[in-house]
Every structure is written in C-alpha cells, then in structure tokens.
Length: 130
Picture 1 (cartoon, rainbow, N blue to C red):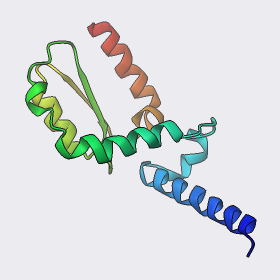
Picture 2: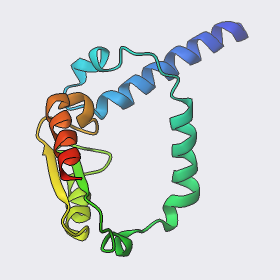
Picture 3: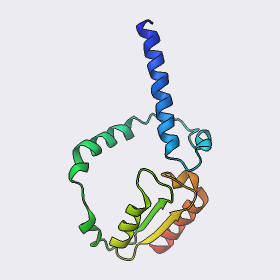
Picture 4: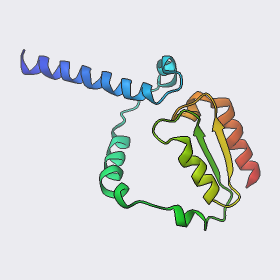
C-alpha cells in the first residue's frame, strides 16, 4: 500500500470512528445524518477538550462555588447521557440555589438536537425567568 493509499484508508477509519463515537452520544443514533447535516470541522472542540481533559480536569471541582450562584440558573441533561450521567446534573441542581432542572427523556448528550422543541421551550422559560 502506498503512503497516499494508507493516508486515505486511515482518514476513512478515523472518520468512521468519530461517527461511531458521536452515535454513542445520541439517544436515537439513526438520526445522526439529520442532526449533523451542517458542516463542522470539529477542530476547535477537540483542542478544547484535550486541554480540559489533560490540564484542568484532574483538579477541577466547583461544587463549593455552586452554592454561591445567585443568578437564575437552569440545569439540563438527557436521561441517557453517557458522557455526563444524570446523577451529576442532579447534584449540580441540588447545589445551585433556586435552579430549575430539566430532564430530556429521549436524549443522550445532545438535548438541543434530540429534544429540540422542549429545548426551545426551556430557553423561553429561562428568558422569562430573567
């Protein structure tokens, strides 16, 4: 296999692996094409996540600071979120005084896509709250 063929093969596998990873974050993976029809490089997100994962995450704990939040706050999550399980969103809600909690019953990690109508209602509720 030539270097160019290897590169094409590698890039195709990398793309497929990225799609599989994203599908694991969806409640309805079969809607992947519908949700992600708009182009996106993903480069900025990956760089930020790498920085956070390796530099900040090991010592990142804001639980004590949550109790000092005094502005209207919404906490939301997908019922089946595999990347940030609902138990953590429940904890945040309990720690932030007077926060409002939303659970998207048919969503994993992307409620803004999978529960678009309810997500928009949540945003409207927040606007009315402030």
